[in-house]
Length: 439
Image (cartoon, helix red, strand yellow):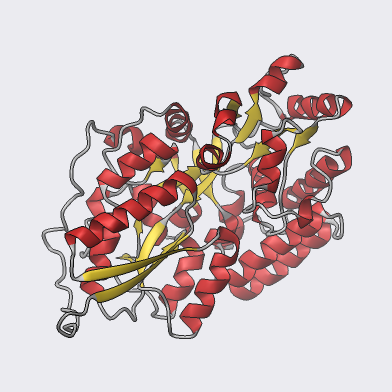
């Protein structure tokens, strides 16, 4: 099971194209063998059943989610939903505190993987097996919320991580998207000479720069490098591949590939994107939600944006078609909810085909819901990239147990800050892995 969580193989990813239908139809009904949900306590006369819902989406995705919540309340006049949008970076802490304090939201956002599993293991998440239609979702999306053959969340969208670049800057300096890592280094050096920041980065919260470690490890060591370390079967987190990945990170920093002070800049506030919008930076590596941010913050910039995958490294075992990505959002229900039936119905509304299609059309979102078609050019390109993938490495910090995930982000940030050697970072990761990962 760990392997499905850690890497979604290409045969599953091809389902995205195979399952795409046409048109928009109502959300799939609950499975015929759906387990009955205990009725919620009756509300007092004149009172509505109140549900709290926490999510992190911004821009057009936020608008679409809020509209779906409003529609849900219209369809369920006895239910009042308090939808609370929380910025991505503080969200995990707030939810962990709420869970630990016994006062969680009824419905909440997650990314599946090890982060959701910690709450599942503490019996804090409602088992949705048979209460939602598993057949309505891509296997690749649902697997990250499935533990011991039980489903604990419903996925709405998937994500991949390409490089985004300013086509005007590339054209001005006669630059083509790189096919190899050596070509990327040549581009970085050329942009530096023109006083343009090659790559924008905001890494105060540590996860944005972690994409580099994941891609370097893959391109050097192949698609199985993480699985072997995670499953304790083969190479480990102190393997020479991870040491070399750290060295390549520090070489980028030494070259001046990134904007000054990147480890102290927040991504959520848009500081790195502003460097792109103003033409001060030429590239940024980020998730699929980047287009959603552009449309909310600087829609005129959209026509300047192009994409390319992380390039291959000569002599490495990884392929340019190996992707880093994940599933987000996954919507789950807290076990402590007073109104489980209504909370489950809200999850269904938030993962309906109707909403998924709107997300694809208006926010360039890759859907985890079956039957969505793609007309938005960015959504088509991202979906095509994912459909042709030879593997997808899920985000380390969403796959690893929480304690090891935090260390992964800490050590990676230290590598970027040049406050830790690659060998020391790899050694520390492996030592912690021996403590928390079972063979």
